[in-house]
Image (tube, rainbow, N blue to C red; front, top):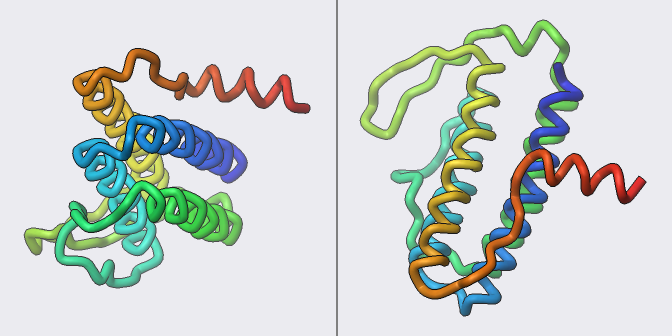
Length: 157
């Protein structure tokens, strides 16, 4: 299970890098940068929850990040998630994680479900970013599909 989730986070980094490049190439419009900032911040919030740490943020919607800062965070948060995953044992993926949302409500979810959520949230938010880029006239978006990523891996081996 660990190898599968590491593969998904490697895909997530790949797709985030592509969408960030598209944002930069479009002149770093505000809404796509805002959405990418949210994607990255949410991933960090979930990582800290999984680690049992306070998230240290008042909102998962930062409005002060640039596309250049997002590029750095893509690499940083990817490395943090990979290090966390590398430290897990197979039975850790079934453990329950207790956390508090930004409203103060308490929840518990299985670690493997949280990880799946983080990956799915990234895919969802990248689609929103793509839509916003289309709205401002970007004609061609990068291919960020998981299957494309897998084909890319095969051609680089």
